[in-house]
Figure 1 (cartoon, one colour):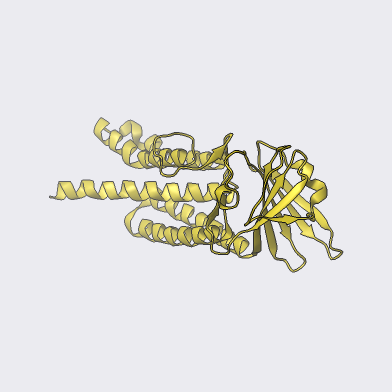
Figure 2: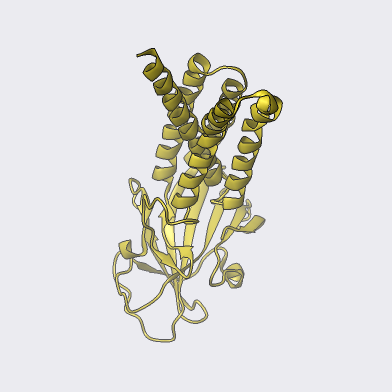
Length: 284
């Protein structure tokens, strides 16, 4: 009975560590604009830290003890990595969700509501993981998980604060070879995500997601636009819930948004009403 209980303890430790590694990695991946390289780098750091006991005691251990050390210390990192790679589209091993993709770029957007819920979930899970590691694990493992929990907690709070600053979200759809016509779709406050089918249902056309614009107004609040482009010379019938717009405050910068990648641009609204570009980056 004791023998079985000992292996059950090891099994639960394995699962708890793997879940903790995955939650931390995926959250950091989300914070840094869904950059897979950031997630892989964090997993590599975790992997190297789990090799410390192996490098220190490996030569003095029997084969059985060495295998157990590798499985229960290094194994959770590999398991977390497999789930992370699968969910982010790197490997088709564990298909937990299916995303609509156009030429390798997701057309789905994650709204303020989803980011708030994500921050709540991550903060709660991090607190649970941190408390669990303190009472269950020892030595390097405990300190590693506690350290990752603290980092994730800080990032979760940052995400929550940044998300609360957003007071308005909308989709901007450009129609025409030169983005001649502009339409907008106001994203419902309670919407957790937005797909193209939520505002445009004609499957004869391909719509590309081309960018995001964040405008910080003079009151320190943020307004966020998600940009899409239907590049066609044909006459397209646009219906509700899309409504026409005459112009955008960043209209002169529209040429910087192109097909096949998503660019994020942040502006600051001046007291004169003009916009000052703060930063820009390629998301995908």
